[in-house]
Length: 426
Image (cartoon, helix red, strand yellow):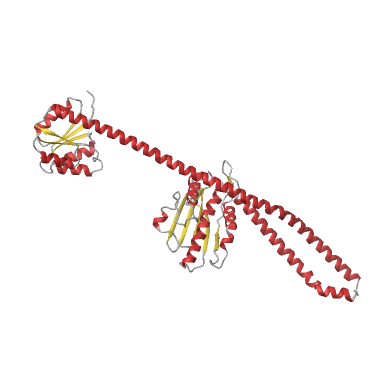
C-alpha cells in the first residue's frame, strides 16, 4: 500500500505506540515513533511530518511544552497537532486547543475515531497547503505584474520625456543654426569688406596729402586711428561669440541625440559636457544662490556602446538634483564652502567598464532616504517640484538598458556622490 501521509507519534507509553502504529500503518500511513518531547521536536524539524499525535503526560517536557516549542519554530509551525488525552480530562483538552492543537483523541483509543480524526485533519492540511501555494503563486504573479507595470510606466514616461525634450532641443538647435549660418556668412563678407575699405582709405591718404579742413575734422571726430585698431578686436570677439553659439548648438544636438534600436559608439564626455552646458544658467550666481563651480577630472576613455540620449537623461537628472541640493544648502546656510560639483571619469581596473563619479558638497542624504531614492515615485521635494520618477528612470536606464550599476554614497551635511559603472561593450 502506498504512503498517503507521514504521521509522527510522540508518547512515552509503548502500548499506546503499538496500538496507534497498528491502526495507522495498516491504512498506508508512514509512521515515526518517539517516546519523549525533545526527540519528537527534533524529528518534526527533520522529517516534516504531515501530522503529529502528541501525548500530554510525558517525562521531561510534557505535551503542552512540546506543543509550544513546535508552534514557536517556523519549520514546524504549520504541522497540525492532535493531543491524546483521557476521555474525562476536559481541562487538558481546552488547554491543548488554546495552545494551538487542532483536535484531540481520547484514551482508550477507538480505531474508528483515530482514523476519522486523522483523515479529516490530513485532508484539511492538504487543502490548506494547496490554498497557501495558490495564494503564494497568485501573490508572486501580482508582484511580477506590478513590477512590470511600474517598469512599463517608467519606460513610457522616459520615452515621452525624451521624445518631447529631444524634439524641443533639436528644434532649438535647428532654429539657432539657420540664423547663425546667415550671420556667419555675412560677417565673413563684412570683415573682408572692412579690410578693403581701410585699404582704400590708406591709399587715399597716400595720394591726398592735404585733405580739406572739413574732411580733417570728420576724420578727427570719428577717431579713424582708433577705429583702425579697434575693428580687428571687434571682429575677433564676434568670431569668439559665433563659435560659442555653434558650440551651444552642437551640445544641444548631442544632448537630444535620438536613440537607435541598438547601442552606438559615443564619447561619454560629450554627453556630460552637453548636459552641463544646458544647465549652465543654474550654475551662475544669483541674488539667492552663490555660483556653483564645476570641476572636471576626465580620464582618457574609449568610446562606449550605449544609448546616448538615455544616458544624457541620467546625467541631467543627477546633476540637476546636485544643483537642487546645493541651492537647499544655501537656503539652510548649512554649507559655507564653495559650492562644487565634481565630475570624474576613470577606466575600471578590468578595462571592460568605465566609471563616472558625480559628486556635490550639498546637504547630503540620510541613510533612511538613501535606501529609497531609486524607488518608483519616491521624492523628498515639495509637491509640484518632484515627480519621484527621475532617479527611478535613471536606475532603470543604467541597470536594465545598459547592464551597468549605479550606487550612491552620501553623508548628511557633507554631500552626495553617485557612481555609475557602464560596460564599454553592450
